[in-house]
Image 1 (cartoon, rainbow, N blue to C red):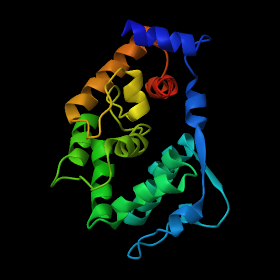
Image 2 (cartoon, one colour):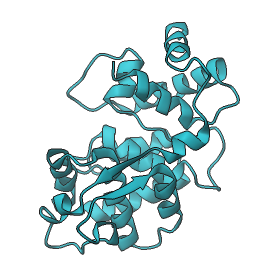
Image 3 (cartoon, rainbow, N blue to C red):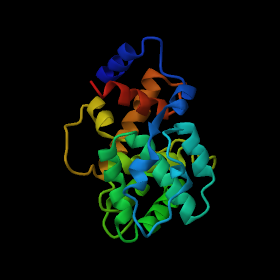
Image 4 (cartoon, rainbow, N blue to C red):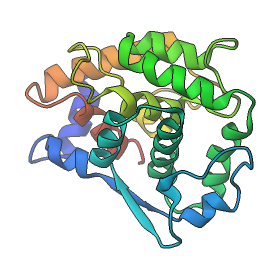
Length: 222
């Protein structure tokens, strides 16, 4: 824990990033990379309207999550979340479109969205990680924790202290976890959230929780 806090202090000598900086983090994406591979049985969401390069930020995704009220809006949010996570890389876009070809994928996304907003984040994680619950083939933790995070982190009705956070390979690397080709179990996600809370308390107690995820991501790429 001390080593991680020292690494963060070295990377951010002026202190932890501001919440506003984290919320402004965004990425460009190209709608054509999506529409060229789009499954025929699903409507194309408004997130993919037009042909020009588009941009999406964390704050915009939180706003979209607040407006979810239908299967179509869930699908629109899924695309926006994954576009934020993949950027302009066509090969990475192809990977996150594959889950939408799976039978029942949109229903599972709807269930997991509301599970994220009403359940403990570890329980919501487990549902997306377990066959016969909300698991979708090809939709692994590196992306479905983004889904849980954007679905529920900014929900005004969420219980304080139980926020879902993104866990991907860079964050895991920052924590010193060994590389894996499999899925992290829900116990590992619980460990991550506990560790993030401890880092929050030790390094930047006045900062919001997702500042820790953002900072770990930054040092995890080294």
